[in-house]
Image (cartoon, rainbow, N blue to C red):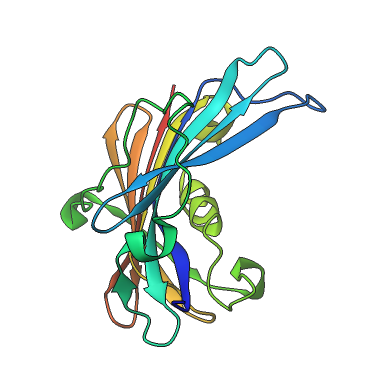
Length: 195
């Protein structure tokens, strides 16, 4: 048996409607396959009428615990029953481009205790908090979130300074890149679209 773990690498969601206060929702998630680099899972939130609220696609890398090197997903998840009888989401995750630094706005964030997961690294949802904190509140409060894409490149440990570059691609369409300040290494890319 291989001593390995899965790490989230890419995440794409489409928001059709946000749920209402105290509304019951159903979450479904299922493996859809793997390729040379990624194990893939889809997920869906639906309301009581089975109308889709949010759907998503995730790509996971499989890594050895001892060496922190990637291994073929087939070695670990190849035995899983695929959700071939469940309709797949109709979009793929995407590799996000880099922000043009000459046209970007810079924000700086220092990781704090509340950013961390049980492994002492930044929780994956905190990247969204940081990016949304860079936007004017009006953008978020007066518009509906339509789409989010995230690429995770490198973990961010505690007490790390992160430079966040933000660029407006189009109306209500933003691209963010987070770099480790000390090394300049790209840690994450986020794209958020509102309508």
